[in-house]
Length: 611
Image 1: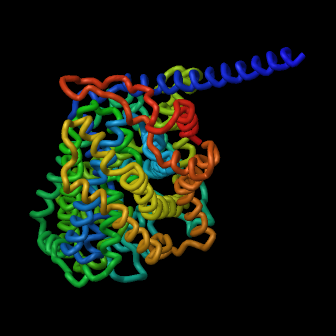
Image 2: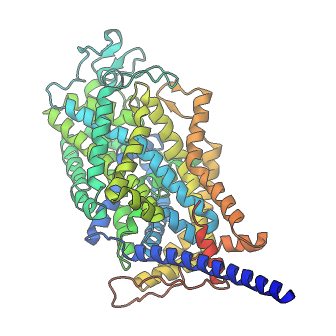
Image 3: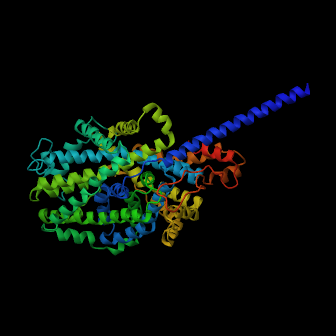
């Protein structure tokens, strides 16, 4: 009887062992499939395509409207000092860091951050969330640009006078004025023709059907520019990334010949040194660097994951970052030369002309076209430029979501949707539906709320946790070894020192962002308290994934709390052999156990890298 019981017990034990072995084998097969997918990943057809795509993504509408205004508000030329200090200490090093992560792991931000630091895997999800939220409202700017473009094919331009059906004659004036009672014709065109805006966030009004149609058109354009992946997008960026510079140069050449242009340029470049004593100016500079280059949004990791393994990271980092900075300064000269001309023509101080946000490019600058020779031509060129600047950034933000979905669920998605093109279509449709509130009559209030709490609040927190995960927990020495695998040499001392300082610098910036936080507003409209609360909900749509990821990782790993904590900050997927010389493609990743961990524990960690 005892022998029978022992025999049954042994059968159960063997059965459990067999089942466990099967589970481990299945998980190993799954991991091997993921590794094979990474190695078979499509790449940019030419190296220059990634560089142009990176430039197109980082150089966007913020360079044209946000940077010139920050210069104006933060001491003119003096603002360039904190901007370039932050650019050198944070911008270039973190851009290099993100490109190297994507290029080495050949996955999007979600899987990359999960492998680098399982405890902070939520940072990767958060970057995808913030990019997706941004792409839902960023396309609205493209809609406005197309609306203005269509209306620019007439002479005189429709915003040149008050003799239109949408104008309120009692308060309309043909030019910008310091009088608080009257409003310019260009402002009324934007408010009462384009937006047909309501009086606040609590009254969204009716659908703006013209903008609704243009929103559909904008998403159709985006879809057909990215639906074939990087092999197709790489061809599109040859035009969309380079054409805006032709237009900017043409506009600047025209502007500097106008009377008063020099006054505007002097105003833009003249430094007010006392502004450097204000902490807020340094915070503005840091946030502008993050927004301008696109650090913390996941797009650079996603795009660089399609690079060849030995692609020159330093060259691309310098090309993208320096082009971005040069474009910001160049745009400042373009915008303020027009402001100087307007100030001269209508005898209004530049202080009363420069405004922030959409008003700069959709109200003030169109006003400058009215009195220029051949005004419809300059209006058409300007809004075509805005269209291309917006599209390049939109491509990258949508690609983050597509790449992350395919990295995590490719087999399941393709089982039902059959083709990647349908995955891209699904992402575009969902983003379009979420963006519909922006094209209502009160959509400008929704847009401003989303932009303030996404691009100006969430991004600093995301950047901080990203550098903590990579520079502190993953380690600069380990990152340097990975880069040496790809390029044959370790990153220089400048990059390593900046990576060491970046968590401290961003933490200081984050503290001052909280201390000096300014509630969202649009022009003179003050958002209600429930609106501010809604803004924080929007911010937490991305940030919430960080604590969720921490909790999920600690709960799903096995062992004591200390063992789980150590496992959760131990990277995986890096200890594999690669041929480093004379090879143009990478060797398959090997499932080698991590130091001090059994294959079963490694598979457990791999199983729990997604929420």
